[in-house]
Image (cartoon, rainbow, N blue to C red; front, side, top):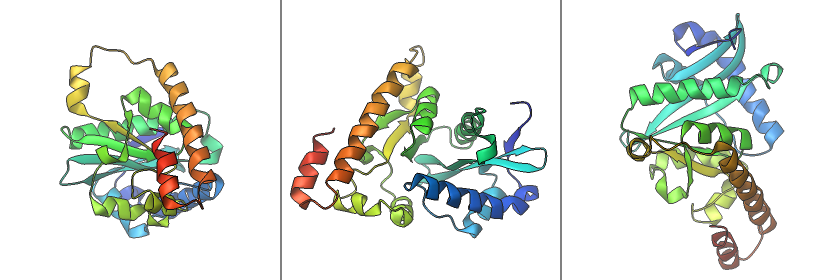
Length: 225
């Protein structure tokens, strides 16, 4: 990873905003789910506030992530994690995520760090950092956060389930609980297998029942958890 420079973004990195947005958009098309559209001014603001991580190979853009705080800083999210196609498979996403996690812990040491993801790779990275899968009820209730889901292609699922479930999996790092369990070592490999089965089954049920009666739909989804 020494070939990459992974740093907290600053004003000198503003020229990369367009390629950051394009990479996010391209990733959304490939996945067909999950990544909501980002406004250029929002990304600029995150960079100016020193709340973003950028990865470069020389002067070439390689990856990006930023942090957001919600509910009067009670919750923090690491969002918009992307890696350019040419640099995938080198562990760069994990390094960017770790740097964003470190920034979150520094800027908001008492905040719970959470994320929503449909990707098994991100789920595995989160698990290794100490995140645990949780229901959406344990995440922030800040309406501004959930409003950001409106541009996702799966937003209708979130609405139909009354914001209880979606294709995304909620994951949470609670610093208070982590302090109590710091002597315990998680079995990441075992946890990842559980997450993999959970996510596959969840997607199967949610997509299969997409046009189902609302009451029946909620009963089937509730059976997952």
